[in-house]
Length: 101
Image 1 (cartoon, one colour):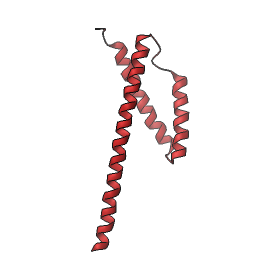
Image 2 (image 1 turned 135 degrees about the vertical axis):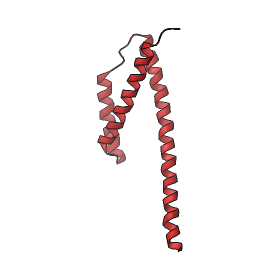
Image 3 (image 1 turned 180 degrees about the vertical axis):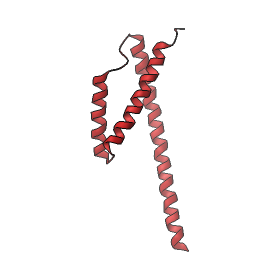
């Protein structure tokens, strides 16, 4: 019976590690969104374009390279980044559309 406990314990340990990693990802994503919120405020306050296609292309190229280096499928990394970028643009649009107080 002890042989069955060992794989279960290892599985539980690995799942706990995945949970910790997911928490770290969410914390970092929160930091990223706070930073992009400040970027949105800056763009709004200075009448700058909300979308910068050149910057987005640079980000995609960079994230695909980083993904390869980390052993992550580049297509997955790009999909995640594009979702983040779309959310950031939506947030910036809402900032620009809000009434001044």
